[in-house]
Amino acid sequence: MSFPITRLRRLRKSPAIRNMVRETIVNRDDLIMPYFVCPGEGVQNPIKSMPGNYQWSVDLLVKEVKELYASTGIDKILLFGIPEQKDEDGSVACRHDAIVPRAVKALKEAVPEVMIVADVCNCEYTTHGHCGTIVDGDVNNDITLKTLSAQSVTLAEAGADIIAPSDMMDGRVGAIRRVLDESGFENTPIMAYSAKYASAFYGPFRDAAESAPQFGDRSTYQMDPANTDEALREVQEDINEGADMVMVKPALSYLDVINRVKSSFNMPVVAYNVSGEFSMVKAAAQNGWIDEQRIIKEILTSIKRAGADVIITYHAKEFVLNNE
Image (tube, rainbow, N blue to C red; front, side, top):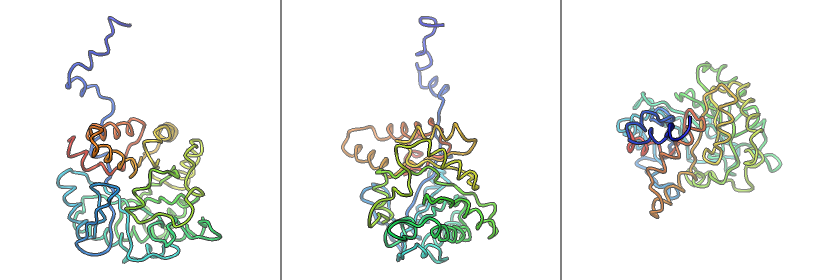
């Protein structure tokens, strides 16, 4: 049937009707809130390029996550670390007294209800800012797998609920799965950054994590933004190696990739609404150019509508406070 018998506006005439027939709904259970943990006590360093975000010392991070859980019900966080010192291969992250394992232990004791996803990468921990060990001017894939595997076991031993390798080395999911299983962590899931692009949207994060590369860029290991078929190959490889969840990063400029991944694989799909996407919204809102809360809701809805089951976003806390 067509107009005038069919009038699609009938189902838009009131908030109650619109709410009843809404196809895509974002709620707190879909969201993971990222945090940056740093050395010291009583530290809350503002991240200038990411308004409202901070580098937290462990003691204040515990208070913040308690407040997050109490005020919003968000029970999933992602941790990144800023270490006391760095080295050439990121081995400092493999120590049991490293910054993220210390934070994981403190959080598990204080807020056991909150699930902790631990990022596994070397860029925050290396003097050169790349995601692995440098040999002949580039990251050596197979040597780096050893460091990533050791870091993963340390994080699991500290109590991390999910291990999330973000480095984009070939074979790292399989290597991490093997070493976790051998160490008695066969039930610890892997959330693989499977289609992680060499994106300009990461700029503010590199300020936050103090992880900007000291030379070159990451194009030899992160994906070319022009490619989507390759993303499906990356995802398939990670699934074959034992990934329990797969991720597309960034989200907004890669909604088509999220959709293709979700349509192609019977897997939980995670999307990372990254720092540059967050900071552009904040900058526009501070200039009065947009309705910030409506934009945030529209962005997160678009990511879920594209096919994401889980969204990592710096907007998580404010979204829940303003919408639930």
